[in-house]
Length: 207
Image 1: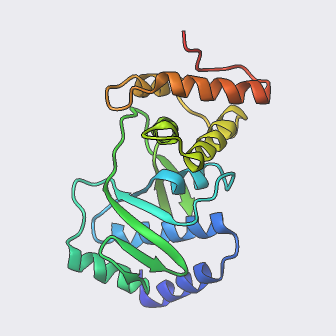
Image 2: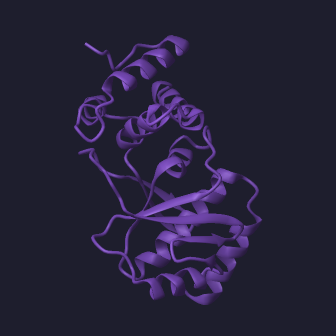
Image 3: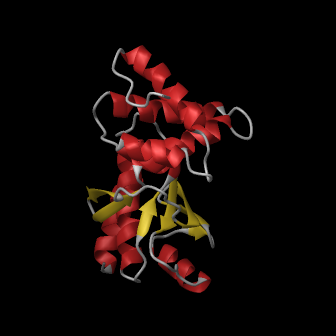
């Protein structure tokens, strides 16, 4: 991306008032400039949930991992983020009024593909919602009750049960039963709770 387009994009992002649209725009720009260096980024955690749910949950920052085998050396990371006017580093920056965290390699257990969203400055790769659901429920319960994570998980499940976001429930069940998570019961209980609230069928029966 040439310098003129980069400046125009940063001006656009800095002036964006909608938090979710701002996250998508910044993710789109970051993904494009990193891809030019051979690294594919994926939006993870609450940031991915915010974009997938179209703002039903608002993260407030942008969490990124790299989907490729390797990331950039520290100096090159600083150069890339510096081209975006970023300050800080080498894993946490402030760009266009938002905090951007680079968290390392993406951890995914789902056999489904990453979700793809077209952003204004290029395609954005999002963590698989099956992974996100099981992960958020785990964080909501372990090691102690986490109300923020619980609210996030509930909003994600609500959007899914409402029909706005499709998931593979067999994959959710499989991931939640993996040794890495072992939280199927907690997932089933939360999905059942929200299904009752919405008066819809529970797709994750515990039996």
